[in-house]
Length: 576
Ligand code: ADP
Image 1 (cartoon, rainbow, N blue to C red):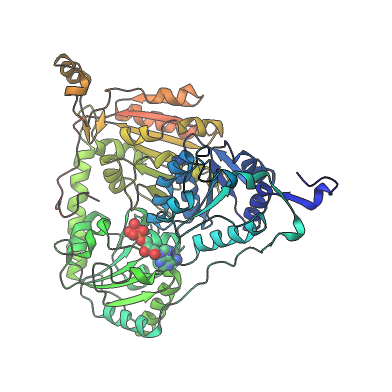
Image 2: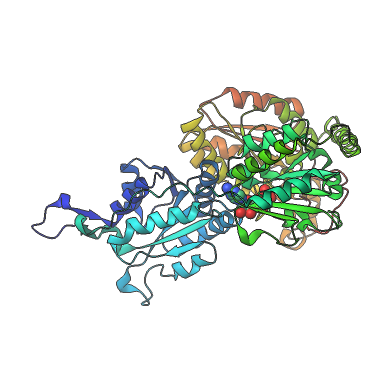
């Protein structure tokens, strides 16, 4: 409230200041769960034209906000209540930071005059968020709110993108200040585009030109930096083989003839020169070390983060800068050198042979007629019906790993999965984010969310959110009755005879034949329970034809279905 006698229009509340500051920074989407003390912030944000999506758990809200950051290059906002609300969001913050995605979490906190008194949901929130963010702060006054929001937005997108936290004491939310005392700031400038040192570019081009078995690795940093055109030009112009990481898929389409994903192990193991475009040498890339890589492999790292260069492997050349800009620099140099990698090399021949044999093995598994289906059969039949431009969200163990190899991506930033942190439970939040952005930017686009049954369980109640906002999402639950594997209904019954399930149910098991599709129908969406390839394709076609109603297809597969034999299943504990 404005002081007695003062003109109302000269005063502004903390909630309004936050909403206005976010709007000034061109923020479009806010996800969250309202309650004391943040409800007014959500209302003010919506009133000023920021889209507000109310979720069912702060963790899923935070995953959704971070996916908006990855998809649009501008941070999504996650609005949470104090204490437990903020703690639920920490998972999403950690996930965003690990993936290098911009995100801003705004957390309500207890009133300042009750601090250290055991206030309702009191918690040291700024300190708690420090470990999960690039920047964690509480504005010192209402007047400082616009500057703090600008700094949070700027930090989240400048340099290596990441998560930021802004703390909002409850008493700030409704407190009013005179507008004349507020330190208003403009929208921050877009992130500066930095190029690599000329000498490093020449060195890298020369190393590449002397390679016998070159390979490009395209990571999600390349997708985030919107380097699709320049990297595509490099691949085409120089005739280079490339391998996308899970979320690097689609920067250059998976069906490009130079994509060697089907010979991944061979390509990694024998390449003598590798250019890494926005991908870290972490567990996903087996740390860049033998036996998955040659001991003498020359690695050229392209990254925006100087501290990343040299992690685990000493690079042959460091190209510090924006991927798109650096790729253009490299192209320029290679054009001057008139260099092209020969398509008739032994390296290409070996890679093509390996791709062919691996593809044949997957195809044989996919065409098996036995029921219940295996993973390969499911994905083969999904692939036949999948729209080319859909956003694919995927999580689970085998569901995600096998799905990655079987479900193609043709466009950049069209795949969202468990990512660097291997987080289960991200799927529905990601799907909601992708669908909300699609509704605004590409209204015909569909979001297909392929979930393991265990992964779906982490955030299954977000189906209500999907139905409430009528989002164009098709969820496919690949149901094997468990985590990694499960029991069929008969074996489950048999097992129950031997004692209490807490004593004898295998820890990997979930309830057999669960009807997850009924969660969707409970909220007005369409649910399908399918057991055969024909039923699966019919359900998917019907779901895609139905533009207005979300759907969930529960696909029963063999609970013992597994992935095909791998060349390597060790060194890292994951098979990615
Ligand atoms: P992946 O999971 O696909 O292997 P990572 O998340 O490990 O990818 O790596 C992404 C990398 O991309 C990070 O090291 C990050 O610093 C980098 N990156 C993000 N944006 C840019 C950009 N615009 N230019 C260069 N590098 C970037």
